Image (cartoon, rainbow, N blue to C red; front, side, top):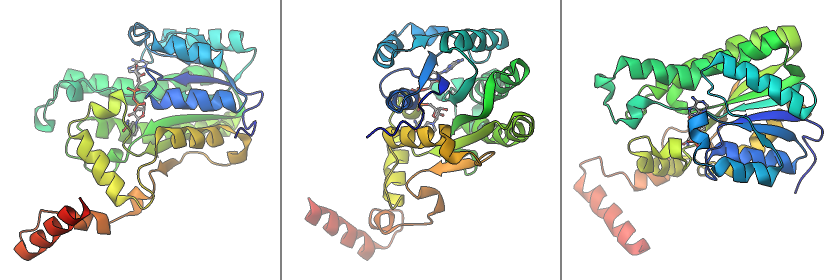
Length: 288
Ligand SMILES: NC(=O)c1ccc[n+]([C@@H]2O[C@H](COP(=O)([O-])OP(=O)(O)OC[C@H]3O[C@@H](n4cnc5c(N)ncnc54)[C@H](O)[C@@H]3O)[C@@H](O)[C@H]2O)c1
């Protein structure tokens, strides 16, 4: 049910690659809530053409921009304000990529050129975007910027690789720029730390299925879906959350606060207590 939470608001949504993308769901939900916006992605990602289907569904324009290129960001903001007819009220930064993860390099064997690229695309890009917007005065007062993060920023996930450093930097930029933009223009900047989600970026991480299943059995509410993430983003873009800024907001069904759950204990075969193992196997067989 739509509540017109974003009626009259203008936005820019980065990162819709296909219908599984978190940004895709956010775009559909923002449209439902009355927003108008521009969709953007790297020129190379537009070749997949999927984004144009979303543009048609949401009646929005697609303006390409590589988020690491300052001149392309300047063009994106100028064009978006022209198309939408004024300053921008909300921005979703839903972008991440690690060549080290893509190439399956072990954390102790990272390629540093790849690592610089990971940090540039997944974290420094947020600074570039905010700095360009700040100098152009492109975001309205009380505007809201959300960047997508993951708990691997704060805890060690053995195969999350250099994305851990990228997310730590991203969350730090949220706090630092949040201060300056808040002081100057009352612009709010937050990150949302989302559950493992089945998307192109998510499933590219080694062992994703285990990440997903483990988080699901740890979280009292289960993993948060991309649809519910879109709901949260919409609320964060709305005027109902005006005083929230510089936060890393967990959207994870309770996972980040857990230590261990009954479900994880029931499925744990790491301990070498034979009696305990036998009981667990029996339980699983009975369930089937
Ligand atoms: N999927 C998960 O499990 C999960 C969990 C927590 C956080 N996140 C974060 O959510 C965000 C969105 O990822 P997703 O899961 O929807 O996957 P996705 O693969 O659908 O989206 C990633 C997007 O980044 C874009 N991108 C990459 N390089 C770019 C560049 N140079 N310029 C502009 N865009 C570029 C891609 O084209 C793609 O659209 C990422 O920041 C990701 O780290 C994902």
